[in-house]
Length: 353
Image 1: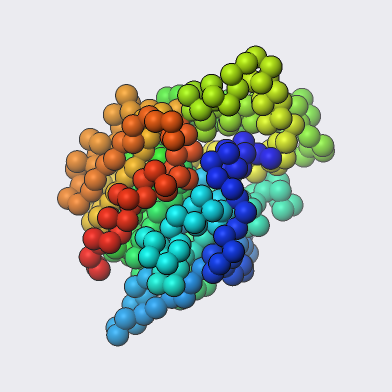
Image 2: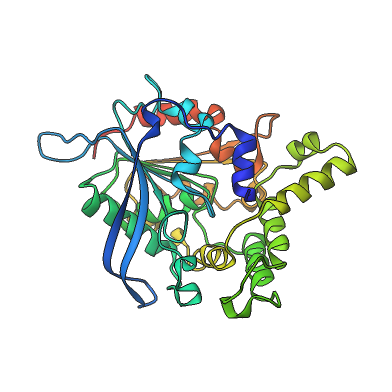
């Protein structure tokens, strides 16, 4: 199991809620898709799950659609149908009650069952960016699902950053946005350093062979170790592994279960290379609720790289969750039991745009 999925399993059961939250899975194929690099592919597939039914107002505008973006290395269905998420948000009377809302959960470009390097192109696969990923989400909604407006765009980690890209790329398309666990600033410093270390541990593996490898790369151990550190929290780790033997055993299990394709991993970490919403704040008009946790290793509060930008927006709020026995560092983004009350208040108070 990948560390990102291992973390999700620790946070909450990933068994789907046995309700409407099972959803419907399908694929949308974009034809002649042009990437920001200038590269093109005749077909780019995006896999997705939908839960609920879209509803239009008298003017034909869809008013109940919610797009939720997963984190780096994750998938839509693998992240957002478990009890820890769906059980808190999708039920009757809950903030995203799926008898009222139409929830769209994509496997984003480069991930899951969507188009990615490991499908066959390997290093010839276009070096996509977050802009490309959001563009494909937009095409899925508008051309594939007939959704011409979003009630809400939200996401965790990478999906958090995608929410910011949505806010300035399609500023009138949504009523509001809830980015969870990121910052509206470039990925630099330690965050980028770790991403670079992950990519280089794979590229520099003697068996990488310019992406034409066979079998498991030894460098994947280092890559998975870095990824595990990014998503965890010291207090929780200390409780889970209070002895040397327990700590060693936990890490060995994590590394032994890693099965991510190296090219896929390099591509999805490098996709963040030009992310920088701070340059586009003047374009943002929709209300925003941004939530981070104080024990987030990759988005620590001492960087002060969220609140100053939130203050520049007309209708935005930043919540920094304090460290408690319930928070899980970066992974707190997937625990609506902690931030769900503030989320419900925000969604309930959103005006239609």
